Length: 565
Image 1 (cartoon, rainbow, N blue to C red):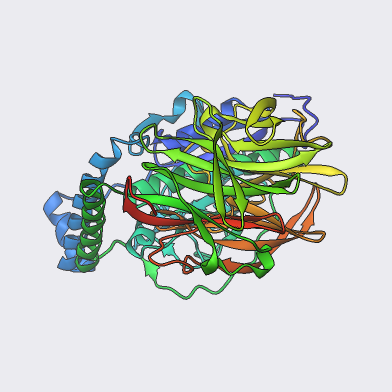
Image 2: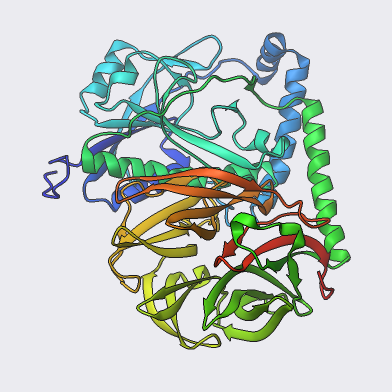
């Protein structure tokens, strides 16, 4: 197929999928479905591995397994299948209910090539005979994607122009092996990583082309489905780059691996996992019975952020059945005003409220902006002597700017910067004659706004034509991607980044000095990390802002709804 697209390829990028059957997971199917919509990317062939079937009856197979691995191995497999079966039932009630469903890939990829891998005695390593290698080479594929089983070795690694791409659903610096998504939950790790790699002959030594992480979910299969969903988006992005430029990203630096090779958990580890999962469920039920919720509060101090002593700050009281979060402070006419999210538990929605700050306390000015969708993170900026607000409105799938018509209490919609986008916690600032928009986009539409930082630029903060940064997302890491405010010290700019915890939003935050921002690069350096130790009995903190005179920040407690923090 000839294409006049201006990209690297005059013909469409030819991609082959290495699979075990024409039936594949929803994730492989979604990849092929996406490619079908790209005029210059062609998923041209299914390379189906005809894996040799082990002959013999069930009993003889069982005896072979026992002889090879021992009786405890069988117990481990059976026990883990029971965990898997139970969590499949729970997963069926979520948006990931199709996690285990098979889809017919041949409805999207019409051509197939069957090959017969030579399987090692261990059953893990797959090699291929010369006839099959020649058949694959004859397809003239630009790249192959490993979507089937087996550790691929030998000439198949060189059958496509750009080799074979593969997922590893785990942070390969600390977690190699499987099952995907399990051990991060078992060890209560804050994040679950993934990599996209180009396969080499070395086991676990592929060339890492992309690395990212998401917040770890509380259950193994939920965590697995979430990381599969998120990583798929970046395989699409990598194929898009390959089609546009004719090259893959430069490999990242590898680091020493110091952990064991993880396998199916043994019975003891399974029992610990089940106990910890039950304990989490009991804690959740206890909080519901006692009507206790995670509640955010806001405090302020008359201090620049560089001299702030957080334990001395004054807490702002929220109304009963409400919480306050995401504060920003601005000075106007020698007065100081704090804008923040005012969340109403009964409405399950936030609006924007304002407080006037003085040395004696905070005067409640009431609700200043309300919509029929959730609002939070009211970022305030000035442009041409006017005051604007860019609140988080991801529930409405847009990024919008409001103008103050009667500051601080009256606002009107001034511009919708972007539509049909799931973006949270957006911030704008001017640097080097450009306006920069930093925002947290949920590329996979999975409800996760904590893992990706995207940057856009324009010559006007009210523009509706924003150019994407060439490195988007410039960060994909749930420990530092989400915005938590912005700080200034002279001409220096500091982005505040949230840190997410295991099954927890807003574990803490870091302050990062902006080193470089231009259309090709984004570099920041962490200068300070803040833990929630400044008040008693805190669970988290995720936001800070300052106008040089007052500093405002938020904090998290678990308390009974209706009581003051």
